[in-house]
Length: 113
Image (cartoon, rainbow, N blue to C red; front, side, top):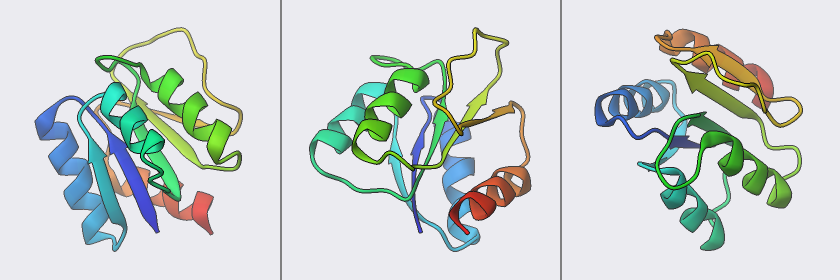
């Protein structure tokens, strides 16, 4: 299963990528919302989206909506360290930072089962 990780904090992104790869997910990473949208425009297909909410260029809500336009049933997991106005796509799951990778892996595994 291929997961797109969208996270602007390099340390958090590296930890998420390593954790998902250890759990045998194929991972694509983007350092900004704009980079994630560029991947979408390039035709990159993914099985799930793990995105921060506060991102440069396009926020996590915008990224999720764009991916859901192309992949309507795409599982979306939002991670955030901020209490923000909630705008998740239907079926999206919000996990607060700091989070445990085991929690993210369990949610993604269930969503992709």
